[in-house]
Picture 1 (tube, rainbow, N blue to C red):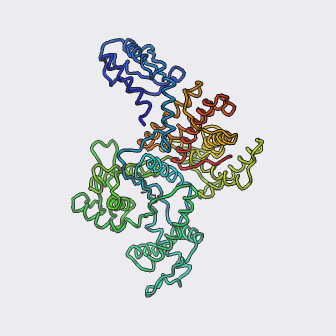
Picture 2 (cartoon, rainbow, N blue to C red):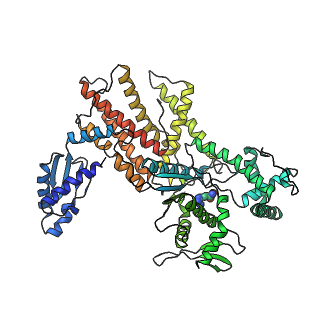
Picture 3 (cartoon, helix red, strand yellow):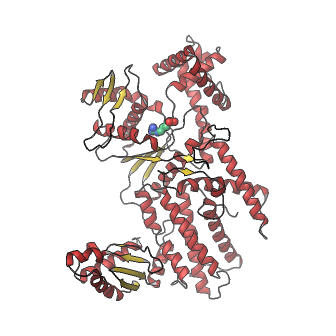
Length: 595
Ligand code: ARG
């Protein structure tokens, strides 16, 4: 469906033209004075210069014209030259009715030019548990991916595991110390390696930090780890077999953890998958004259004339020939282009990596790893802070495991739900249901708390606020959905149905307000996709939930006597619920049946 703002703008354009003014002045926006009008056009102010007329005269002429148009209930010129507009109730009702009939899309069309987009938003490291630092990329990336999918694009999430480098050598070295008799360390072994891993995830999670801290004080241990890393990378069979055990054990644990966050990846590729592409890539960069040796290292210049600050060259290989973090990212681009031909790649990481990604993108472009039209985008997010305004930590100052954080919120949510139950008569939900529900609501609390902020900004992870049923929170949105579900259920229980329901012109200002908010759905979703901005969807559903609740408090829905009026209400409630549910689905969470 065409966006309502465009339909309005078309009429305003016609009016400008028929009054003898250029249509470029006919831009319409939502009103920033909702007390005065619903939409506004400020074009007369700009047109005044070109036509050497007072802006008010122009606004007035256009207003006169629009007053004869059945789309508008009001078209008013206001000094010095604003055009204030209100749309006709019946026009709005028709639009909402069409949205209702457009099941599943509610007026939001799929793109006509589907793109293939790879979203890189995991970055967990093998053998290390997920910690709070992994929360933001998971939440934001998953939502970006879902928004793109809803818009009809082919979105591919890649976890981009940190499975390469010294950490692997450290684990192997520590394992060798503990269990030297394992067949993986026997270089003469010719047989098949066991299927079962020689460690559990719990052991693995303990081995890695132990090895890492030991290597810091023990030079020869560190050397051994570096040697093991080298041998692994050279293809030593026993170590390769260990690597796949480490990967398997770790990945199944990571999958479980991501699943708990309602986050999933289409691709479980890692840094190690990029390694085979490095030699050829580097050779080509040299052959094409892009890569040259500077201070022993192989580098590619990526600075541009318009830079206002220093952009250092991209280091491709260190002086000892070793590859780096960015070599892996570049080689990852190589296989992604080869296997998926993406039109776009989006990276969701901490914003402190902004300069880094600028270098990588420029290098990829310059050396021809991507096509000139391939878009490369970095979405840098800010820090998740504790209430003290400092990066979120555990009480004893450590990095918090993601699981523990989620547990804590689950508990708090359960407490609130139980408390909430006490204040109500009627349905009392079982302990079992309360537990399930608290998980659903807790996830909404966490995700909405994060996504409602513009990604680039830091935010304060405030458990009390996030889990509140009131205010701009996830639980408030869910509460609204649950409220609608309950009304719709009651309506059905008394034996009524929606047969022959059509959206009637709004019966009150609050109902019109709700319809106006509903009508913006397609524009909001499209814009959130274009700007990779899930926070815009949060802002929208908060407004929608508020508009609904205001309408609900002022309107007798279930006791409405006129059948067609009631049916129209119920139909609009169904649409409100569907849109809220569609929006939270792209944000990556769901609503319970009751709470
Ligand atoms: N594994 C990396 C880390 O823990 C993050 C990877 C981010 N993504 C990327 N394509 N570089 O720091």
